[in-house]
Length: 373
Ligand SMILES: Cc1cc2nc3c(=O)[nH]c(=O)nc-3n(C[C@H](O)[C@H](O)[C@H](O)COP(=O)(O)OP(=O)(O)OC[C@H]3O[C@@H](n4cnc5c(N)ncnc54)[C@H](O)[C@@H]3O)c2cc1C
Image 1 (cartoon, rainbow, N blue to C red):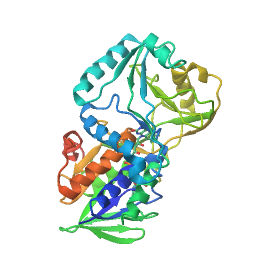
Image 2: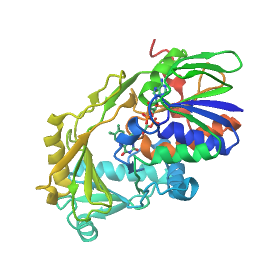
Image 3: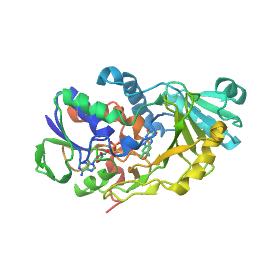
């Protein structure tokens, strides 16, 4: 079997790698350089807490692959099992935390509940005013700059052809396969995977399956390097708009942060998401509640990235409902970094064998049939 993968973000490169490992001849087409879309902009959170419950089987599979990534890809992708700590400052937030923890347990996610004393003893300086927290010890973070190039390199070693600076201009279903016109010539294949991120909606629409997707840019920032004190990724349970900040400290000391800000609208042409300077004060107030010691620290850079958000905040994953041989994996709504390796393996299973054990019912493209024209 041969396959074309459109898009060289985390989803496309991971799918290319797992397809090549299953003996499929893969050509990956990326209009820029691999990993330079939403993937490189990611905060790097490998988090399962507060995911949509039906996404947890995929998230568990992905976490197992993050743990294997270095051995599998032959490169340290800086996956670190730091744990994910999520603070609650209000009673309603604590109730939401407990309700989620109860609901997630049958789905295989066991969250520890920490009272305020235990929180302060285990994580001094983090959330001193919090009334409780959840802790997910097996979660962590990875390096968004490294993961897609690492998958692409490993795929290349398995014989996959990675074609960069190659914009897909049109795709035609021939009846038995696909003809893909690009800025670097015409390619053909039996099957095609649409892994074009925020741009995936265009490809789906061109092939007769429009979906309600918007391109948006979450707001991120990073501080100067500081002595390393914050081990876990830190987030918050809250119903308060503008309070939902999150942060992590990378090994060289900088604190990366995000949340607590509206996502900016992004024009898909050219797809450059800009940081909004007006968002920064609100973000800083939100993260100071998580770690007050960050009060006098300099922010050295802000950025954003172009991500696809479906109307129901769930991705599109699975076979096309109308075109044989066409598969979709796009629109990961700001939470695809954790899922990426699992998405790649699941799509490879589906394409190579026609089957996957991972439930994809909630992510099927046909859920929007008739909703968009
Ligand atoms: C600022 C930010 C922070 C985030 N933080 C987190 C986080 O902490 N944890 C988490 O789980 N998720 C996070 N996410 C989400 C996560 O990064 C994305 O869901 C994930 O990286 C999406 O990967 P992708 O491969 O689908 O898309 P992308 O990385 O965008 O890749 C799609 C690729 O398709 C290419 N392409 C598009 N059109 C064409 C065409 N016509 N021809 C050829 N190539 C084309 C693009 O150039 C692009 O490289 C964050 C996202 C952003 C933007």
